[in-house]
Image (cartoon, rainbow, N blue to C red; front, side, top):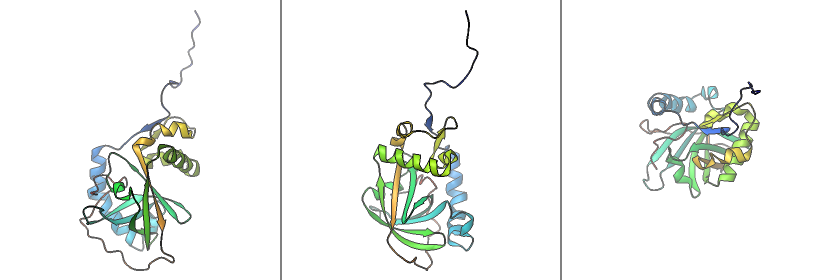
Length: 198
């Protein structure tokens, strides 16, 4: 009886998977990378990382404490968009309703208002637009693993969208505020916002 020797991916295998980094990664990011990034994003050398990272500072809605974290962002005009892991992070919860923030963007302090987007379809559409714009390599910044070389469809991405949150920050000030952003060094979070208090 003839057999098909052709091997290929299992058609039932999802093309998109959530791949949150291991705990050790977050510990290294929190205690080693983030202190360096906070200083770097406020310095004249910010251009080394500020095309992809911004410094987000906000007051906790319930704690009243100010927290500061470097986060990856995508810029669409005067809107900055950050994506984080829903279950592994807390900082986005402060933006379930519109909430003020201060952002250090490309060497300048900016006032902004953030709002979390939790609708599955909206998240899937944003993630796909980011992958189309920057390539599927961008997926690792979003905590995703893409199977294959094709850009996933919105329906593909909707399978993991429940595990993600998109936070949109609208810039409130123009021109940029040209003053120093004072940050307490004990304040910490991560690119994904892991273990950041609310």
